[in-house]
Amino acid sequence: MNPAAVNLIAHQGGWDEILLVALPLLVIAGLLVLANKRAVAELDEAESGGNDADDS
Image (tube, rainbow, N blue to C red; front, side, top):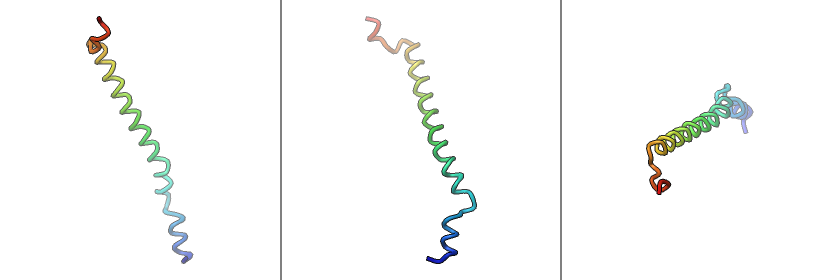
């Protein structure tokens, strides 16, 4: 393989290293937001009396 091509593949100016950190963080943040929305919705449902089966 051409040495210039190896240098090009090996070093992309830093953006690829940023993606290696940023993408997992964004995925985790998105999952936390989704879990929080579900938890809030479940609490709202429980507070509004959505669990009628427990009342009997």
